[in-house]
Image (cartoon, rainbow, N blue to C red; front, side, top):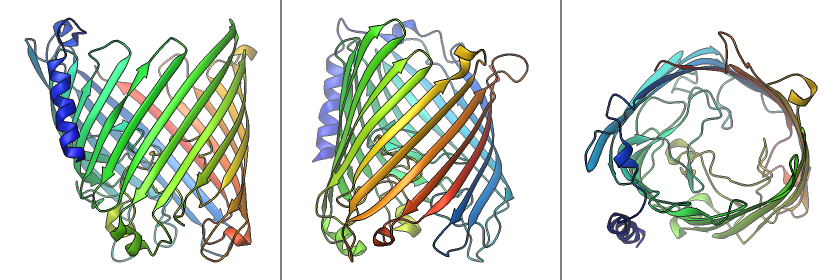
Length: 428
């Protein structure tokens, strides 16, 4: 059914372009609008677990190259996107690698991680007016299919995506992907995805109000719907209040329920965050709530091959209370208090700090009810503002996560440290 809907949406996009936006008319050419960028990334993640399991840590150096051509001139423009990825393992050998939440380098049959890994991908793209069809290897960033780019290398997907911006403020997306490349492995289909169909869009109603609706269908796994509403109340020049609502409804397929030994097939999860900004300061209060009869809570991400997970992208959780823990257990309710500081007002341009405290309760597992967890999150980030290292960023974050015994089936206590150094280079 979703395949037919995607086809109808695509036809609608193509037939509704008269007297509307026309990005293709502004095309300068295949070479003239092209770009080549390289991101050098040094990443380290360490996890000190508190339940007796072995601590994990991985450290690596990566080079992420991306090429994006312009579109040829004419009624229908043609272009190409491509990427090449390489990662070198600096630490995280046998015994230290293998944490599902780190996953820089996949463990081999010997139990050891590879010394390095490399892969690439390409896609061809066509543009008519302000509608683009892209086929091939891509890194989609949608609420129901969002690739993971907060580890050493990003994951990617192979398939077709149609994106349309024919009407000012309105963006529509429809696509089908049939392969997933795991971030820690080389093969194009290392994730084991059968297929995922996605459909939806967002609309900027006013300068202050924006909303989005999306749906996805992961073959033999689940169907998912997403809704977002975001409103910014401007108070004066340096002060504003932003309200952001995000929600997912997930329905698991019967076969997946049996495969996972789940207790049910339904989950609803939503979050509402209020952020008050006053000059360099930001203050956030958020509430997040999960409900439904599935003991899996909100299911997302991971890989179908080897992990028996969903396969819809490690960042497919557009919710407020997602740090080390995602606070997405069955029946879980969580509250957040957060604070941010931009040091530019204090004379240190490029430096920012964020801290958050999140507490979750009412967690249900197969053996208990009323479990709790709490996390303290801290992050410093500095971006070089000028000179030869301009745009180089250093991000240091830590999390202290404590999970009650009643919740041990769902999550694990520990201390986590992440250090990322990213250096983007624009070749042309």
